[in-house]
Image (cartoon, rainbow, N blue to C red; front, side, top):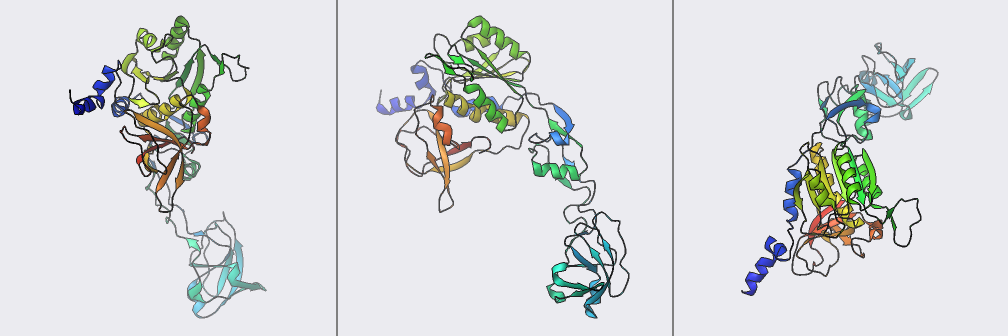
Length: 422
């Protein structure tokens, strides 16, 4: 067998079978996950509870905005034609915001008028107080007409009645709620949040409030996964923990499959003696779609579904690995199922060389920086492997680097995934 033939074998899925594995490529895993979709219900909720939810309807204007010629400065309202003969105007009265529309009489007269008020009929110019001298019930204009601005917003200049204001699929922000309020929407249709359960397995896990014994660790995976989901707006997340006991694990898995839309398991999906998860999922009638992906970290990733379209992800137990796989695979799955107009990964350049070669897709934790030429540059963070969650302290996200034989030189490109709220 020639060296070229050996090289070709090593670069194909056959390599993984020869090594006693059945890994699929990352793009295959992504395609299989995104080809699935859970049923996203639409619910109507109060506007004040809609922040960060995904809009499930198009929103149209029921009125012009502004609904009248709206005064933009405190000052006086006049008919500018009068400026051709005088710069002095008798003040007839004062109009405040919220007052009904009035009509300005003809002649060298004016109304004092406040910001937000309706511009009177027959008035077409608002002169701000800074450009006036007011004395004895009279306003004197101190600025040439050509230097004056109209200082009012024309009715419908923001949008007209019937205009489309918001599209279904956007995430509702504080600025979005203002638009919804202006359209009179006290209730709004949104996609219901998927019910997500995170089940961590392991005899070594103890509660955060506990003082671990020498052979134990505090349970940090669950809360980090939940917070990442919440940071992307998916807040209906419940946390569970179970020891490495087959009967207890099976009972817990079966119970969660009956009441959840998505089940995330951490740990127990590799090839160890106590990695019961794949076996137990099969016993619980969860169809395996794939198990093991050609990536680092996260080779043991498991994905499947039930006949009732409850979707299950078996994430590796190491904290960095499970968090990266959540962001890479689970978050996009939920986003496309809702559906959300989600942001895709962006391309960026390495600011420094990474000296390694790998047959697997590799994810590096990173911080992001902007260089002088306007290119997005990323700098990898040092760490001690996928069990070292401390390395993520200063991380903005991670970069995806495709397999290659040579080191990744400065300027190499990859897709960048940012953590939620980054």
